Image (cartoon, rainbow, N blue to C red; front, side, top):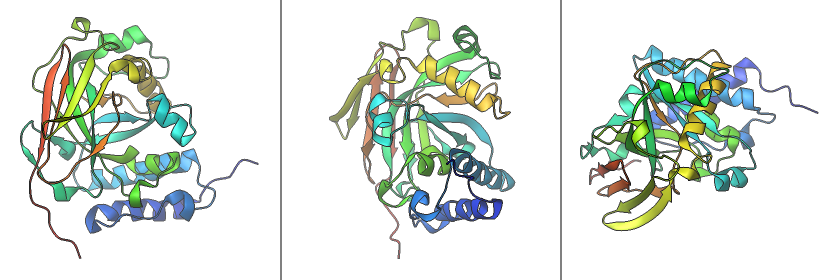
Length: 272
């Protein structure tokens, strides 16, 4: 029998626990083990409650990220489709700018090809050629993923509720026209402190990052959300994420797209 899901009071309590974790720095227990009957709709409602509270505090949405785009991750969590979260204005860091490591609880990093939109995309019904026409340019990117769930013990509903485990991102400085690169074949090498820690290609992202953009536009469109002009879309990682720590420097180099570097400051505040 299908679960009726959580009532609004319980959804709000779950959202508050995750929202407060940003301030306390203390992760919470998996929602799926705390709230019996949690559903997909509950998870997105919990995510959106937090986004509304961030908006009330003056933060704005500057794009979206898509997760669970690799076959391996989908098998791991027993799902057959991606998930998505929101990118807020203060998630964006400049290349080589020191990133405060104490902002995150359990940070990991992964390379992606970022889309920057020149016109809105409003689903459902968006096609591949419409998505292509909406892209202004692409950039190499590093996404810093983080979890407010203790020890990364996440299921699908946990990560969705936790804004798809979003943390921050760094965009490269050289835009490339989407017509100038085959995103399926664009290979990437990620290094941490000079050592190779990951390799992959765009084809790891649902076969092509463009397919992810179409999925996102149609999925959020069914919920009444438009991907806006100027927004950034992170379509998914081209290789597995790796942990990062204070003092680390991570670079992702993409064939045909250039490179992007994230540098973490070398200090970390002690927590009680």
